[in-house]
Image (cartoon, rainbow, N blue to C red; front, top):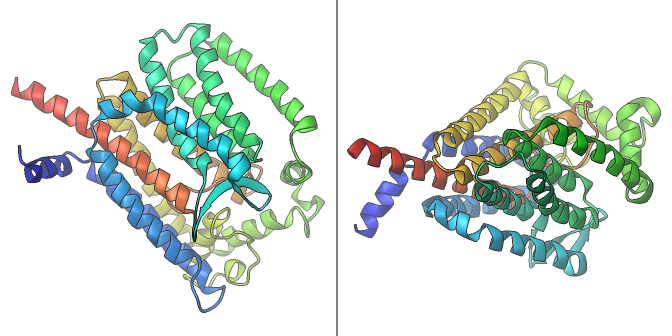
Length: 375
């Protein structure tokens, strides 16, 4: 088969709904980031960088989607090792941004290994689940899979980046639930989580991280200090009403009442400037995204493919719940990004990589179904 025919076949087997929804969410994010950029002067800072990340992300998506799923399964342990190495190196060679040593700086670009660690953990857990051949009732499976997560999470906590570490823990726990692990193991794990949180409170969490929790419990405790961000975010969300104030006309974002509006509070910007209608469109796009991922997982004939795609869905859902929950005051602020919407080259690039992996698994499923039909 010629290169052209292979390319046409690859593109034909893509889940185009999944791709289009990802691009739709990114477009909404770009509009919000552009609006935030407008408020910071004549020169754009965030928007050009995000456009660059988008172009690279689309390229990565098509390359990843054209690979056969067996390549991901065969390289899962190697990718995990690369993720571990990067997390170690960033502690010594990384750049500190807002109190967290979690970025490598390359000229005008930066890369966050914690984002790559999420991809590596999903692939590794998918490989580990496949290796155990549905013997998920064993305690050894729970312990070893948890250890693989804990190694990553522990290194990320040292940066410190509690939000990303929590995401990894939630990802592992979500995939564990999907395997049907015994309830008594789940109860034991929840007990260990409580003990870990208590230990972290006294020996790991820094003052500002504790203050975030106090603020979540009582936003009025320090309305002009620690509670300021959440209060302004809630005001922005409520101010949008039905149709929003229009792009570039949100007072909370344009007048800089919202700190880190392009990342942590991008949802608040969208809610204020595009209103309930804009928020409804965003949630609809996310719903379609998750639906397409679950559909691919159900159609996959191998545990590796199914659980990798389910892991991607769990990751996106966790990010969505934590970011939006923090923006509207239902959850503590953790600095977790909103997939495809928040500013951040590393995050956007890895999100498109994950979509590419899902496309690869979707293609494999289509090929199998076609072969069965031919027989």
